[in-house]
Length: 232
Ligand SMILES: [Zn+2]
Image (cartoon, rainbow, N blue to C red; front, side, top):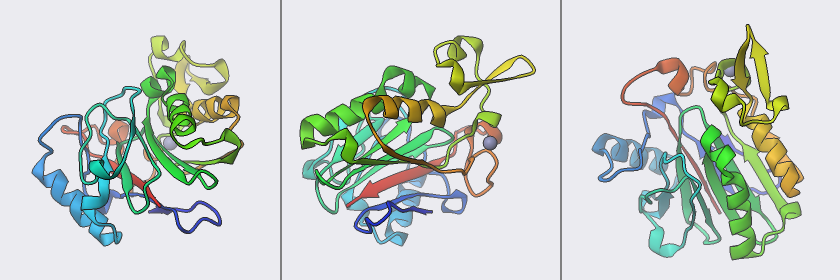
């Protein structure tokens, strides 16, 4: 699916779907050949040259890669978030229930993309991505437009108590005494605290919508998931 930044058709952003097959890249090399083939085929279908895509995987860390021409076509280790201001260079991350967070700054002409699960949120991955855009591109938070793409919703995202207690109470829902985490709510409140004013959240839940892979719902080994991408 394509994700649209209103009035900014020069930004190409999206998320692969179940029929595109699995795109999961765990943070290790070499990349599985089937995944490489799936990704190359998918990007070509989107009109994107796979050699122009820089990829982050699932590391559940807080590293932000500042991506330039030399990174085109590469798989970057220990990278849950990427930013670039290079035109026609695409950023990608792996997603399977976690939040794909897309950043665009029309004034500074930069984009970013983050894979944020509960560890990334707690670790400050979104804050790091914003501050790296500020440092590298002179972005101002009030100019940032952010889209939180399809993700697992709070109704389907039960977490352990020791995870729940790390989050603001308003982002934990309790049912039958068990805690459920609202990932997007946590992301939104963190972005608001930074001064970001333009955040939109996809209503699509990856657990409920069969168009997408869901780690929680599918429970398959190896994990299957989507690739999220953005570029100018
Ligand atoms: Zn749901």
